[in-house]
Amino acid sequence: MTVIKWGFLTKNDIRWVNREIFCYNKISLPGGLEAMRESEVNYTVGAIIAKPENESSWRYLRGLYKDDAQSWVNDPQVSSVCLTVLSAKRNTVFALSTLLDLLCHGFQPSQDFINAVDALKTPDLDLSDSNLATAVCSVLGHMDPMRVNYWAWRKNKLPAQTA
Image 1: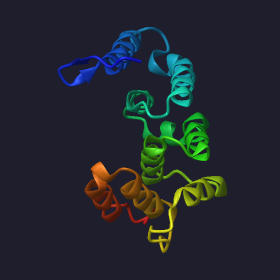
Image 2: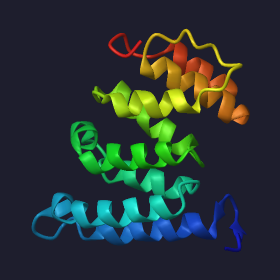
Image 3: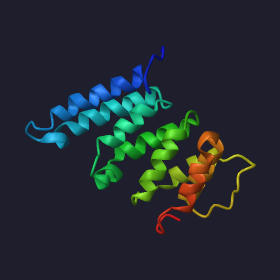
């Protein structure tokens, strides 16, 4: 896919923004966002599976739950797409970031998530992380060197229930 930049947005970003505008214009219809959320989540999950390195689709998925973090945490499709991408062990930065956000909002991971994150650890990582959220921050600091300071900051700011 060719990437054409308009200011700070790529053609891909604009496609997702246009989809968001189209969907949010439908919110005034009967049922609102909840009525269309399921089909949008299905579409977005498919897009994420096809291109897990596409940050825009991950952001769009999160935006579908704007002001409703509990529904986001409790939707099995959200955690499932994270686990699918993590298990594939390729282009996992946005899946890890999403998992970290889910954990910070109270998501209770299964052993499969712990195993998937453990499988991404490299020998040079500090393996003494006592829980999944701190392990995710450590892995992200290694896999995403551009934002290493951000991931260290996130690790230090983890809510008490996740740290």
